[in-house]
Length: 353
Ligand SMILES: Cc1cc2nc3c(=O)[nH]c(=O)nc-3n(C[C@H](O)[C@H](O)[C@H](O)COP(=O)(O)O)c2cc1C
Image (cartoon, rainbow, N blue to C red):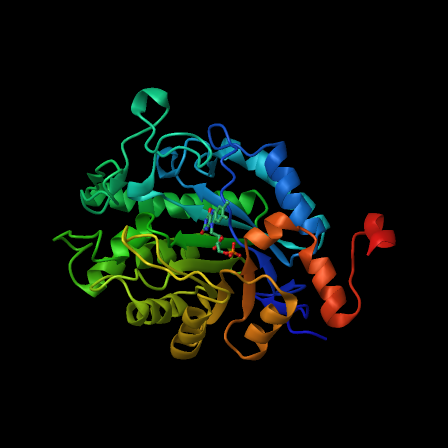
């Protein structure tokens, strides 16, 4: 039996395989609500055989959205719609997961398929916030620097959103701390120039992330799986780097994070990334080995043998897949057939696989 398609258990929850849906913004919500699109989109990937199906970044506050059409988890009214989705994912014997997020200085932007960059206030936009008043690039709005009280409020909003996520039936929560969004902005010396307890030295820059983990872990059930997605490097001199990622991951492990989802980049506008197959696997390998925590690899992993080799070589514990699963939601079912000679499609599809 392949590693990719053997089951394993985290916090008492058996997960049928290690092929997991990576979070992907759908820009299809109004006021943060999920709708038919989310049910069909996430439901198809669950029917397609993924072991864990993760939503896109769901905002912990309206200002924490990237675009005005992001999914949200900032109010109880969001729960009912999400519950329909998690129920279906569970019917497919997959784990429903949600990524919770705040966009920080990269908030209030248009959907990628719309013209323009920042959305002005009179068109449903808002004033983005950040650790310091430093814009991401010369197209971006300058963020408002958060006060200490506002930072503490946001830490609580992460915890409140996590509790709401559990009420909506999610069994796994991922904290979005990558890609140049708010938590990453606090971690990185490129975007965090604060001179108080939340900035300056390495310990202070980690404070927001660590407080979020403490508050979220303290608020959710022992059985809920907690993941953190980080950008392992800024690809910049004097930025956030692999060494700091390992140290942060060690602290996360001590605080009850179960697995680090290892991505990279997004906080330095001049970054140069050579995006080739497995380009981020080295981060997963390093963090797994040096921090002694489970990791997930992501980024241009598209072939069953490729995914299997990463797991066999002990470079990751699970594989997150993004665009390949957009192209083909049935990738897990057909790949399992290829690797193991059998698979378990929904009964309705038995005659086709
Ligand atoms: C349409 C789209 C939306 C995305 N939205 C998110 C997101 O909400 N949160 C996140 O952490 N990453 C997001 N990503 C990044 C993916 O999760 C993934 O890390 C990236 O696409 C690389 O993996 P892949 O080569 O398998 O697609 C998005 C990617 C795509 C293509």
